[in-house]
Length: 147
Image (cartoon, rainbow, N blue to C red):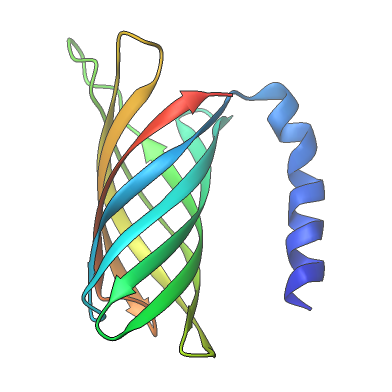
């Protein structure tokens, strides 16, 4: 059932990706409860609507005596700051969390900021607070490259 919903969601997003910009990149950080080092990747569809982006990602957590896997489906609302290239954002999303052959679902609220680099990529840092059976919080940083 989850696979069917994932394929349907991706099919619905195909027209959006043609009109919007896309970014792809790695991310790294840590989580609490479970206390893990987290590494992963993300895909960003920018300007789904004005200042709104769709940002799904995959994370692998290592530590606390087990390995976890998370699928994150987030939306970000970006703010323009006059005179600054930094773009803070807030958002939220849903998470499927897999640990020790069990699966859990939850959500998150988040805040972060991104800044473009001279190479055309974007650096970001983000703080995510989990709700439900997902990590209590994650602190992540990463890079996004035009696709």
